[in-house]
Length: 330
Image (cartoon, rainbow, N blue to C red; front, top):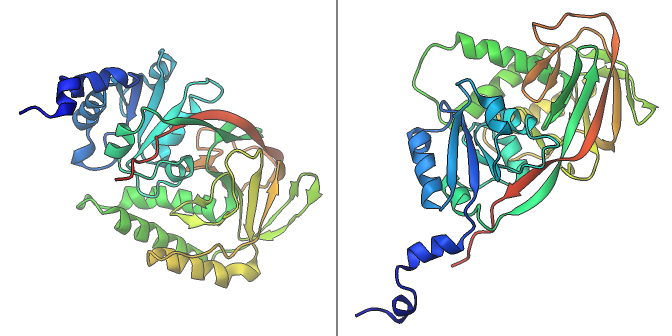
């Protein structure tokens, strides 16, 4: 016997898909991120099942820039923070919304953008999602201009980015680590570096106020976390037109070490560092490494110029994000 609902809605699954908004989605996928459950075949099948028309582009193959220029309703980045930032970079001021399937280790940026569910849940809730604006960082220096989405800074975390890249190359090909193991490994590396890390003199102005001095690290934060999920800017808001300046001076070393130890142990830990809001930061580059998200600046291809000023500002609401619809409570 047919149920009443079936009598009124024959083939209701087919009709339901027709009623849902069918989107053209460009899937940008890092095939090395995530596990076997989130490969190209599985993700494309999930998008088709949700009623969307998707085209695929791997981050490991040529054509990424071209793919981001193709007509589409949504660009879906599947990977870690590096993949998300790479895709977001191509969408600044485009008006095309970005969504994320978090397949990385830290997923700092994905969390800040509002993508905390599983990839399957996110795909199932894209229809009915809500668009919101996201501020973008803009750094200008002697090597040109660059965008960033998580944080920019100098000192310990910048040198950690360089050390982590070298450490990754030295690692023998072993069984892939879990996210928790990867986080612990990165946290332990950062903790070892802090043990005898030398503070440096930095000439910095925030909104015209001189705060130059000796720093272990300084960060212009767009989101709450940076690096291996270090929670340094608890009041950061991603669409208020301002960044948070978080810094550690030599006297903060013990507090910073305690925070790192908690993160290595997988425990929650409040930020031990002071933070203040700003709209413009100017720093005199002294030859030390800087980082923009997980990229070094200047990189190896860029000439090491003499002391020059670098300006960091906020590009307000320059990125559009489509957050998934809220989960239906049962």
